[in-house]
Image (cartoon, rainbow, N blue to C red; front, side, top):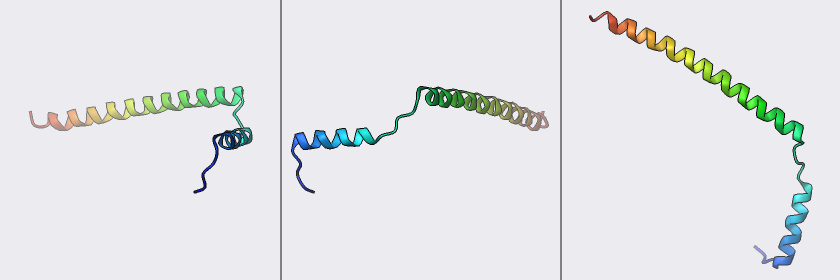
Length: 65
């Protein structure tokens, strides 16, 4: 790998940064809301699954007594 001077490195970094397409404020907000909604849906789903499985296990273990 060729050695690059610090000044040339900084120029290359600035050149690469200018090529980045940054997300707009609206896109970032929508993505954040989407993540919170999906996390909430997943939390409710796993809560319900946990409750059902808990009841099934209690029912099965109740046969022994």
